[in-house]
Amino acid sequence: MAYVVIGDRFVDSEDILKTILKGTEFKKVKDLTKGSKREDTLVFQIIQDVNQLKKELDTEESGIAIDDEELVEELMSLADEIAYNIEEFLPEEVVCYVYSYHYDEGLEEIRTIVVAASEEIGGLRLRDVAERILRSVD
Image (cartoon, rainbow, N blue to C red):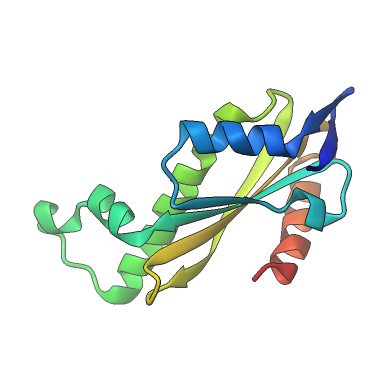
């Protein structure tokens, strides 16, 4: 359990995690907030099933032929888009940074990091925080 300052109140990252798990169908979601050692940032790792993402891309039915590298790029982009859906489970006054950073062909999953903080922090600062967190995950 980690309490984070958002605006003028404290939020419990564990409560938000439970809400995300109830409202989404991700393969797995981990709360990394406590490990970030920041009092103003929520951090979640989302693991998405590659096969489910491929179904949503639907490249075979559309007749579009793409090579493996392009497919991975498309899957990573789609994973980012879908991960942004957790914004609806976060406090209104936060900004999010979402980045899919790892494609695991063997486990058939994509790992995405979601970093959220109060709007006062701003997008560029949030991206800096996310980059530091990415260096320490997995």
